[in-house]
Length: 246
Image (tube, helix red, strand yellow):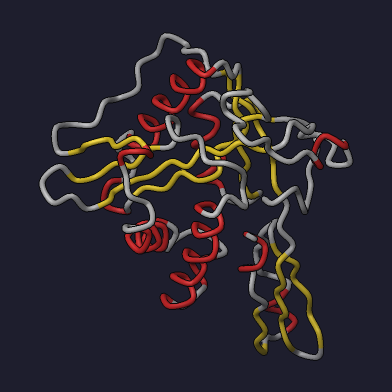
């Protein structure tokens, strides 16, 4: 799980310096016997977005980028490339930015590996896509859209969260789409590539008959929060420190 990677940090610090420290909402800051102790206390916000187009066109990738649908991408043979892309994309994002490169790659193996194995819900093939460099074939971005149980995002005691996927969840239009991961190579960020992948995913979900999709972001991750706001997501009320699988 994501919260597993909020590793504790402890080091000596003067009380006067402790009082000056800025705080991050995903962490608990405590002062004990001349030491600062920081432990993870992640809280998440949930938001939704209609799948229908607003009429605004996302910037299209130039000819140097090729978009592959999930069934065109051999995720098992190329999983190591996905892991490395995730590790690179999150190198400046908490909680991964304070991990060593080796631990960050292990986090990628665990988190993306779980998604590939279906722990975050069945992957929606037409809405999950990979962007590759047209010249080299290297992975530069990915979006993983999964189906989660049809529970309420404002009430995690809703018994619908206990539902399990049927044999063919997409054909039966089970559950609700969730934007589980979207990540872009550092040298390709801020060029509209994530937005293009999201636009493609929305069109695919609308074709499948899903009226909306949900997403989740970590409180304190201002980059993710602003990206969701820019894409038109609507914030849902209520916060949770833990949520089903997220």
